Image (cartoon, rainbow, N blue to C red; front, side):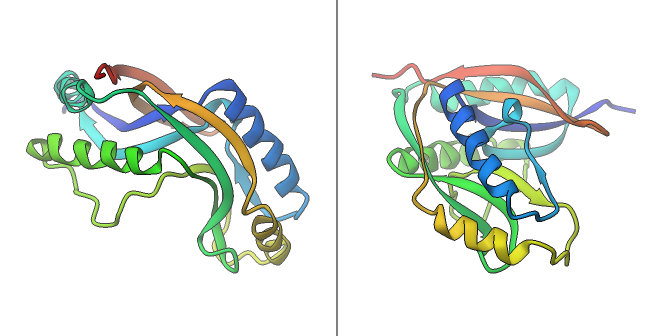
Amino acid sequence: MKQRIRTFIAVETDAAIRKAAKDLIDQLRQAGADVKWVDPENLHLTVKFLGDVDADKIAQVCGAVEKAVADLAPFPLEIRGAGAFPSVRRPQTIWLGAGEGDDRMAELAERLETVLEPFRFRRETRRYRTHLTLGRLRREGATAGIGDLGRLVEQLSDYEAGRMPVEELVVFSSELTRAGPVYEAMGRAALDGQ
């Protein structure tokens, strides 16, 4: 049986963004909702989730990602604005959004969709939306603290986490453990264009 690796492609966040995100999480914890908050060291901006990939295809996937972004220049990305999916009234996933650079992130996502098409990964039908996932509700339908959480998210909709350079994409493996996910970089693709 072939070994399969749970795989995604993302932009790593820098230390300043992780600290600002942790500060925001600390504020949002005050709502008392039953949320599984993301460990700040694991914070990243997913550009494409691939799911389980045959281990013998990982090198080809990494090569395709490198090809997709090699001619693009690095760019600044502003991380700002707390929000929730599906909405602040019914928050299930809490996130930080993006300002300047969001259009460039969407371009990265579209390039990945195109270059990975031969691998038959499911194509995303919704427009890419840059977001840094901060936490997810542990139980669907849980109500304790949800109203307070939604109000806090709404109050922090203009939260400024800072700016960071986007200089590379990383192909990560993701192993789900009882202690939380463990991510490992399997390949890096630099934005080398001018």
